[in-house]
Structures are given as C-alpha cells and as structure tokens.
Image 1: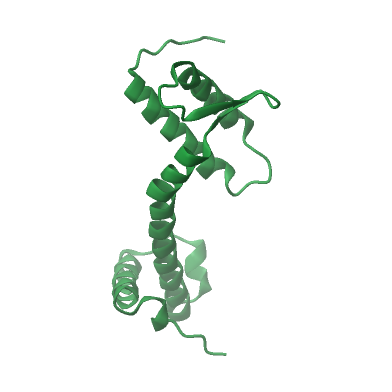
Image 2 (image 1 turned 180 degrees about the horizontal axis):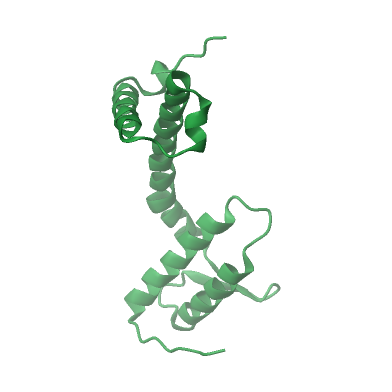
Length: 147
C-alpha cells in the first residue's frame, strides 16, 4: 500500500472533517451496516483533526477506538447542509417521478425500458416544467389521489 502526505491548514482540515462527516452520512444513511472503507478514512481524518483540535469539535470514543464529531457540530452541519440537501432532493425526485408517471400514462410503460426519442425528450422537458411550476405554485396541495 502506498501512503501519501498532505499539507493543509487547520481551516482546510476543518473543512475536510466537515466533508468527511457529510459524505459518510450520505453513504451510510440508507444502510443497515456502515461502509467500512468510508469509516476508515473518516476515522483517519477525524483523528488527525483531534490532534490539532482547536475547537474541540472532535471527540475520541475510547471504548470503540473511534473519533466522532461532537453533537453540537454535528447538529450544526445537519442543519446547514443535510436539511437543505434533503429538501432540494425531495422536490427534484418528486418532479422526476411525477413526470415519469405522466410519460408512462401518455406513452406507455415501454418508454421505461428504452432510450427516449428526441421528440419524447422534448415532451418530457415540457411535462417537467409544467409539474415544477404547479408544485412551486401550489406545493403538495396540488396533488390529488383518485382511486
């Protein structure tokens, strides 16, 4: 295995810690088991930051031999980055799924299993714009469920 050194400032290391926290959160959130490769790198970065630890943002958990971002900093990053990400992703996925539903309703399920023609792509863009505009104007209240 080849090892590398990286010279970075304390502020850059703090940014790297935030990046590691956020990336491992995204990778591990939907899983039952932690992704060990991400966890190993995250622990190395947190350990290095803990050695400098000017803000006390990283704690060492001796019983598990791991480094963790403290709860205050974790909450700050969750509020600042993750909530915004989730909100944006929710609306993007909702628009995508509603557009897909309309495309299937109009053109049939076979469009899910093949590349779209240029005409179909243009239709998809029009539907996406219409769906996005309707959701922006009315929010979720514009959705109905007919059974």
